[in-house]
Image 1 (cartoon, rainbow, N blue to C red):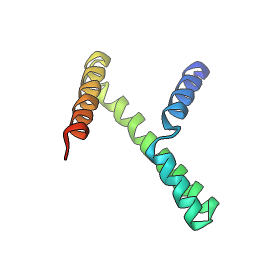
Image 2: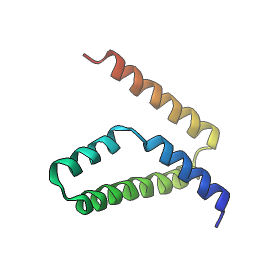
Image 3: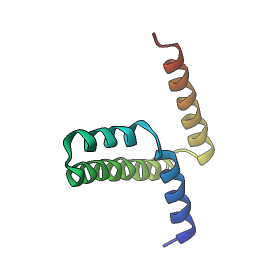
Image 4: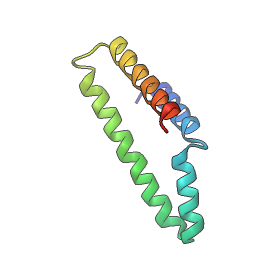
Length: 89
């Protein structure tokens, strides 16, 4: 196992998820339901599933596109989504 890569990914994803709408939704579900373990397991499984899809889709796409193009396309999608959110009314 590449522990440096593991730690880099862990810290990056952990910091990116702090205070985002997923964490806030999880907080609300736990507060409303009072069922901490059900909310924790549901949200953890959702994050694991989306991370699994991202990792394996990234590995698959890298067989067809260079990392430069993947970053360019990913960055462009973030910009387009951001602009859509800003101007959507």
